[in-house]
Image (cartoon, rainbow, N blue to C red; front, side):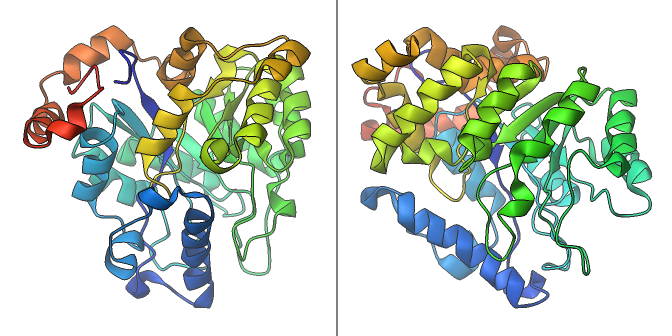
Length: 354
């Protein structure tokens, strides 16, 4: 918890970009791009101290749990996926790998699945991942390579049977990477303008747009204004709270104006960045007065509480009070209290250590 509020990080990763898993040079390039983004936006005092090869390239389960839940303030998190089988033998983040971490803290972690709609058995794969891997949503990565194909579109009719299978199975949350192009993938293939058609055709589905379409924020906001089942996830955008606070303020003012406070979702992109400074920075952040006046919005403490946990909890049908009771004395909570006792500086200023 943070300042007495439930915290639910809706965008984290449990990837394997180890040398052993890389098929070719593109696997190296992809993870190096992640590390480059980290170096560009992280505050100097928060840069990683772990080994790049042995820890950053392949996320350690216990390290993840420690940083997100024990040293961090999250109560729950979502594990994303990027399969990238053209770059990695076992995939970068897969439904199968996500199971390993989710099963260590099943009350706290929701894992997503991923299916490439270009494969011939996509509908069957949706069903397999729901029933065998226990996924509760899907992450769609429209710039993924597959042979000579360099991407696909969310509004391609070939994808519609997959959306329909998700609905049939009770899976309603569709997470889409619609943001920056990660080398060697194409920025054009992440264009957000293919979202409005499926959002209109499938109003029962929730389209959670990771990275709020950056750098195409205007396109995303116009789509979000017309489609009430489109949501904006702050992963990546939130990282600008430190180095470019005015830019972040403009992003937030636009999201609040076009989508409203009920459709903005907190996510950190951990482990590209530590989650701690992003949450601290967001909770302390205030919109400049001129933007408040121009857009007619504000970022109040009540709105922040919705963004950091309440909104995504609602989409996944989680009763916050019941969830907090379920985890108040689990192994993670006990480790967190023990860590706080051993590190008094950690608990300073925190209202909650469980």
